[in-house]
Length: 352
Image 1: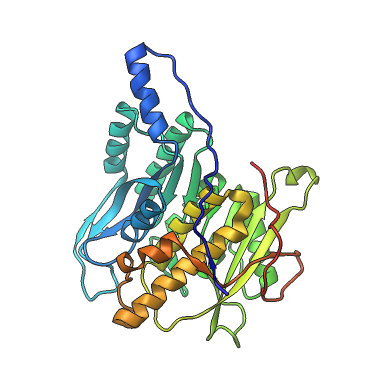
Image 2: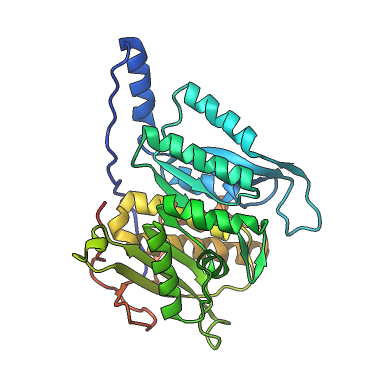
């Protein structure tokens, strides 16, 4: 029986105080109060359809999260169409925007969310932005969807892969690669669950707290009907051996007919939303809500307009706000390979 989620619990964020001149101080404090939960999202944008920010911003907003967004590209439509036209943002233009936010003391976001980033200049400016943001909010969470490619094909210049490996991973809090991207970022082949979690461990060793491989194809006999989500969290204190190194999860998800652009962007945004609302130590429940909403959006799209069409995101707002969970996760032992079924107790996780 489906579980309907109607109560949201917000994870607390620390308050901030200032002591400048009184009038200026009141204004700054008011800005900070309004920004206790606010996302800065840097992703692609299309006029028609739902990818990048078009897939991410609305779900965050209907879940009660304020979003300031910057478009890394602004295209007429996504690149899967026969042609597309538009503009690309470079690093200098992004920094000009960030400078405006800083000047007005508006760079105070609790989260940074990034998706498709097409150039080294822009990617490094995003890291510069994150550094500036963490000067104001040291606890700012960085959710990185490393949009590099899929099914063996790169979408971006090859030199971006090395920048992600060496410069982005040490700063990311949550990473949401697909199967191909996880292989690229770790330089590891992933054909088994053991190999997938070894890749997650390698990403943890680079500094990533939570890794969610959103779409792995591990079993050739099952890959036609199922896709596998794998997740791993590195415990605080794991380096000193006082706690298990990682908590791991697996979920096999039935495939729905068609290939839908923008589902990865939607998934990353919902992971941000639900890990905030439920807390990072409730990753299993957060991912259950995420998958319930994404599956509902895809099913609605298939039924209302056909396989592979633009996501019916607006029509699915209720499914995003109030997901009906049917697929369950539970923590796995590090050697456990079995597919997950049934409901577990409260998931163990990390603090901090």
